[in-house]
Every structure is written in C-alpha cells, then in structure tokens.
Image 1 (cartoon, rainbow, N blue to C red):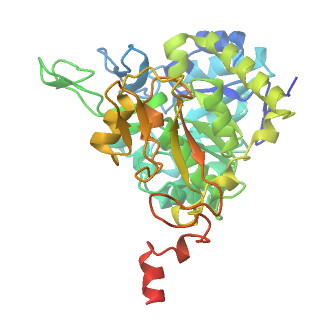
Image 2 (tube, helix red, strand yellow):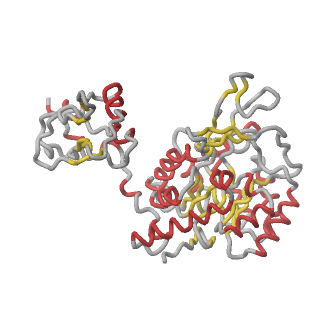
Length: 433
C-alpha cells in the first residue's frame, strides 16, 4: 500500500488530512474524537490573548445548498475561541501528551504589536505543540479590530509579524493567507521574506450567503440584523486550487511548503490540492457536515488512488500537476476538438441543444424525432454540451488530427505554432502588416 505519512516542515503525521482551525477544533473533547477517528493532524481553533472574545449567541452559520440540500458552502460569523487561554493551553498539552504521533498546530491571532505576539508565544511554548499557524485571514469581526484579514491584506504587515514570530519562537511557523485579495502572490512572498516555514490557504472568502425575504435580514440573522462572514466548503475549492497553484509556480515562492485548504470534501479534492503543490490538506466543512469519521473515506480513497497509479507515497504526488498550469497565451492553438454525441447513450432530453442554441454557437441540430447531432462547421469545442449532459460519457470531445482541415475555420490543424503567431492575435496581425 502507498505510504500516506507526511513530514510537513518537520511536523509528522500518519496521513495528510488535518482538521483546519475552526469550531471542530475548539476543545480537547473534539480533538480527541478527531484523532480517534483517524485525522492525521489538527490546527487548534485560533487563540487570542485574555480576556477572551465574546461570540454571538444566535445563529452563527449561513448555508448555500445544492438542489438536493447538499451543503455547498457555510458562511461563518463565529470569532476566534471564546474560551480562556489557560484552559486551551492546558488541554493542548494534555492532548499532545496522549497523541504524540499526530500533528497538533496552534492557530494564533493577537493585536498587531510585537509585545502581544511575544507574550502569547512564550505562553504556548511548553504545550508540546508542533507549530503555530498565524491567522491572517479571518474576514469578519477580528478584521474590524485590526487583526485577521486586516493584516493578511497588507504584505508589509505579514512580513513584519512573521519576523516577530520567528524571532520570539523556535516553533515551525505557518502563515495562513486570506483569499480576499486581488493577487495571492505578494502575500506569500511577504511570508517567505519574514521567515515563514510554510503558508496555508485559503482562509474563508468574505460573503453573504443569502437574505431572508420575509425579514429582509442577511442570513444568519441576529435579532433582525446580519453581517458578512467567511465562506467555506466545496463552493470555494476552485478559488483555493487557483491560489495554491499560483504560489506553487511563482518563481519567488517556488519550494515554499503549502498546506491546502478550501472545500476538501473527497479524496479526489485532496489529491488535486496535492498534485498542484500542497504538501498536505486541511478540512473543516466536510467534518461539520458528516462528522469526524468521514476521514476514513478520505484515507481509503487516497490510498487506493495512489496504489492504482503506482505512486508510492503522498510526497510523490505533490506538485505533479504544477508544471501543467500555464498562462493563457501559452496554450496550444493547434489542439482542436469537436463534440461527438453517442446516440446509443443519448436519452433525448435536449439539454445540449438548448444550451448550445440559446447560449453558445448553434452547433447542435435537432431532427423532428429528437435526434441531436453536432455540426462540425459550427462547433467551437466550448464543451458546454458535455457539461450540461446528464448522461456520463454521452458527449465527448474528440481531437482532430494534425493536418486535417477544421471545418469551422477552414484552417489546417497544426498551421500555427502558438498564440504568438496566430492571426487572431492583434500583435501578430500588426507584425504581419
């Protein structure tokens, strides 16, 4: 069987699945149950300095459902831990003593001054925890107090605080980045300059999941009022994958270890994060939806996948997809495909026809007896028909061989080396003229 054990910046765990800093990791009881279920590591819910914060006592989560009430995203307005710091530290020490083979990292957030960071770091050093994660991502509540994403959106602050932490602590330091920026790379570069051992991302996306149309209050509603919160769950996975890939392929951050977070729900999700450069993954919403034992499915699924692919370890999967992430202008314009409908599988629902006729390129015909066929001279290979078809593999994209004529453009496939010489490129046209 493939080896699922990981060594992430010197922090060892029996598998790459960690629970992210969140409500499921708020206390000893939860964390012990998580370890018993099989989670390889835990990032303890964010600690702050005394006195503790005060959380709302009404609803703390908004939700976005798929059509079958599957939870696609949670909007969380809960703040960092509201339990006393001494209690948390005592519990962390006890848990780590009893589970020495599992990763235990402490998430931290304090005011943006050196003394505050120095004080809390000195207080956590004897817990036996494996490292610290700096919460520079919380978009609500704490950001309004000059912490969380208020720090994570300013690279200079990220670098400054990270330097303080590395100066006043010997513990491995992970910097948790906010996605609420236009470009994730400057934040990661700042973390590296400050001496961070790794980055984790993404933290939650600033959001309002919905509005109650009877009370006209955003959800969740607290006494008729609502606020923006942090969005997590499967819906944010595409954002997270993009940002992980950007850091993994950025020359200024190549080699910087990454803990991937954002919508990890299945073993496939985890494998995608790992393939794009993450050294492990953190999850939250899946545990809040299905309970801690869901990790057993993640473990067995990833193990079977690695075995089937002949990949010996998690480390051998990390970064395999990163070289295939590129910028648009480097895509191969000689690669031409056309949609093909398998008439034996077609159930004649007409969804491909409706999508193509109304919103795409009118490349699918419908006969009187509802036979749908692709017209190659109109098909631009956008694959919307593949995406809306309810029958798996009924519609596929078939590549045209080099040297054949594209019936839509009349061009010979293979005539253009890349975008820089294609006549659709304004710069190429100007050069030719």
